[in-house]
Image (tube, rainbow, N blue to C red):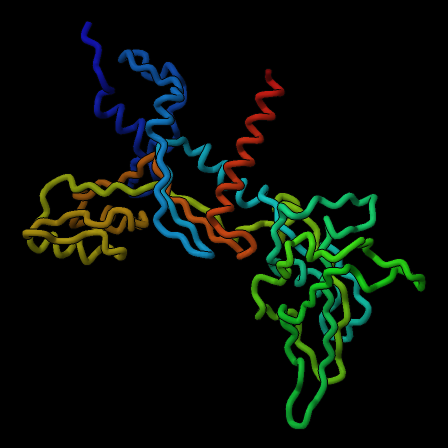
Length: 349
């Protein structure tokens, strides 16, 4: 019998596309079973050579805060793995312990501590180790900040009415507080932390984060100790404000659209996906399609537009909190996934 060189068009479409209907998408699942197309003599097994040939990463935007790139040729499970690792498994430094000597503000100690914990700290986590709870904190696993602010009147002006993150003072030689009246401190630094950070000072990422509001006579005096952790433990250790992806849209016209119908359909799209060239409507910017379905639900244009999504093409966006540059975040996520695969290989080997 004749063996087709490629899948029939209808099977290839359901294999590679998500069909967007008026009410819900269709054919959303990936076809992973190796024998799914055995009846047409198509081997659907995962082939590493095909993966290397088809996998591509195309960077669209990169700055200190945001990385946007296209990642194609992979399954949604792998793309989602990168997303989850970025959110929950890339380590950072964050305030974990707060020792309060005095707090006469209206903010309770617990709320104040929680607010401090959510301030992103600009420190390279690779320079530090995870703290052992049974050992005294050292310059290799703990970063110490001091906050000592008092609000008072000076002539007609109120000084320190707003307490900002810029007033957190880094203590490279460790804690100045003692848990008792002895000379013992909360930390046991044997030297300056500047030697650990290669003389680079440690500061909050943003200096204008409001910590508290004070009135004259009120004050806050505390120490905040940062340790290494991951977002799976608490969101304050997550290095990203957001990490998400969406499938690349594909907008097709089922028939030529001209004249008033083309004008009407162009105006109907809130994302300005369509253009008119030589009197004909074209999908000029399908990437901008938000799947609002306005063109699908319009009674006058029923059946004119076919919207799909490409199953193995992801528009990825990473927004860093500022602790780690976004391009380094993705590199770290790849490294973590590689380590997980190596451990799994050892266990099953």
